[in-house]
Amino acid sequence: MKFFLTLVFISLVTVSVSAQKIKVKQSNENIGGGSNNALVVTLYEINPSDAEDSFRSFMKKYDGKRSSKDGAIFVDHATIKDMGNNTIDVYGKAQGKKGDPEIVFVVAFDLGGAFLNSSDHKSQYDVAEKMVKDFAIKTTKDAIEEKLKAAQKIQSNFEDDQKSLEKDNKNLNEDIEDYKKKIKKAEDDIVKNKSDQDKKKSEIEAQKKVVAEIDKKLKSVE
Image (cartoon, rainbow, N blue to C red; front, side, top):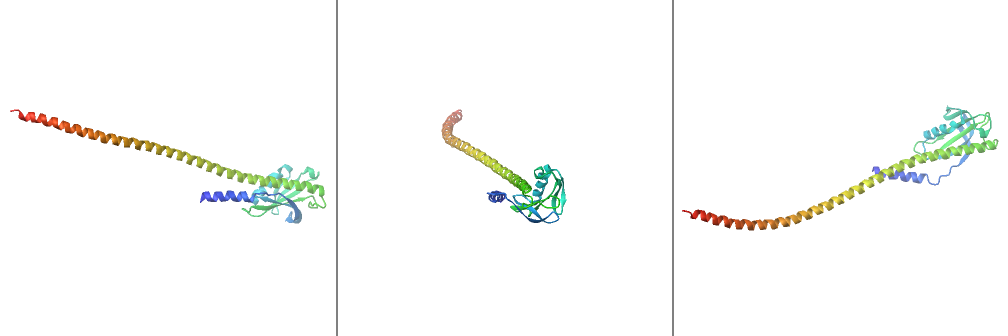
């Protein structure tokens, strides 16, 4: 059963990650204290909590104080140089549940009085879009790589089991050959033993005659 479930797990991973294209879109989302414009991307093969941990780590290079606010990861006064000299408040949160093959991740950029959108902040939006896509690609790849390592470990264990079985098979076949040799020797020994018994019976019969003659001589003495 364990072997079957492992194969099912590997099969599901293979199917679910095939030909995934990371795309970023914008929409109004409940983030940053209200309904605000945000960038939305789909992440694959990762749990929501792990995705949020990944986002915290990803945002570390942009400085800013990282905390939780309004149900999201909050990066206060992040420095994103390609978006300008002013610091930016960034919100990020995962939508989905543990075990889902894919989840949605929402990122909102508070520029200070307005949330980033493609209409009013085109150049900044392009930078943010690439930033979110890079995060999604890295996070998805890291998650899949973990599953790959787990699957490779299972494969390696199977291969070790196979080598062990092949070794056992070789030893068993060698045992059979040894047993065959022992059986052949025993059969030959049985034939020789039978011949030796017949020879010994003849020797016994001859010796009985010798004993009888000597006994006869003994009795004839008066």
